[in-house]
View 1 (cartoon, rainbow, N blue to C red):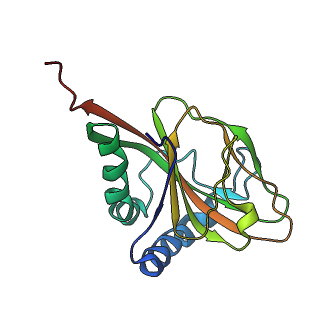
View 2 (cartoon, rainbow, N blue to C red):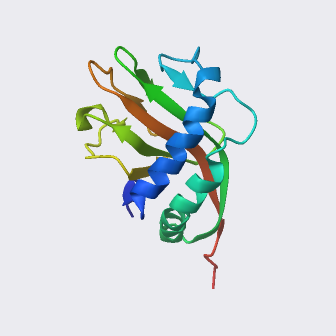
View 3 (cartoon, one colour):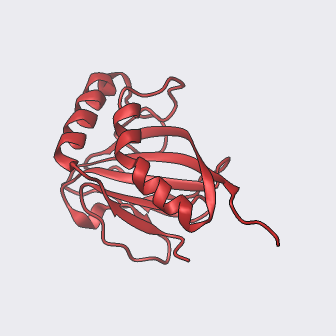
Amino acid sequence: MQFIRKYKIDDWESVQDKILLAIDMVKDNNVCEYANMSYSDYKVDAKPLYWEVFENAVRSSLEDYMSSWKCNDIRIGNMWFAEYTKGADFNWHTHEGCNMSGVLQIVLEDKDNATQLLGTPIDLEEGDLVLFPSMLPHRSPMLNDSHKIVIGFNWDICGSELHDN
C-alpha cells in the first residue's frame, strides 16, 4: 500500500483561476502571524471562499486514496491557503487531530520550493495534489527569489469496508 500519493487535478487552469480569485479577495485581510508564511487564512474559522471549488477538484483523488485503505467515508476538517514570498518558509511539522493531510500546489514558480515530505523525495509541480498520513513531517523550504501558493488541508478517512468472516 502506498501511504503517499500524488494526483494531477483535472481541468487545472480553470480550477487554479477560481482558487486564485477567491484567495485574492481575502488575502489582504490575512497577513500571516503564524509560522513564517507571507499570507495565510490558517486561523480563520469560517469556510474559505475557495472551499467548494477545491473540494470538487480533489474529490475523486480523495476517493481513490480512501478506497486503497478499504474505507468508505471522507471528512475534510479544515483547509487554508499559504502564500510564500522571498524569505518565507515553514519548517518541519506534522498535523494533529486528523489521520490524513494534503497539499495542493497552486502557484509554484520553482519546483525546488514545492512541499517536501521527510525521507520521501517527491517531484511536485503546479496542479499536483499530494496526500499523506498526517504524522509524516513535511515543510515548505525557504524561498529565495520565487513565489508559491498552496492549499493545505486536514482530512480523515474512516468507515472500514473490511469484515471478518
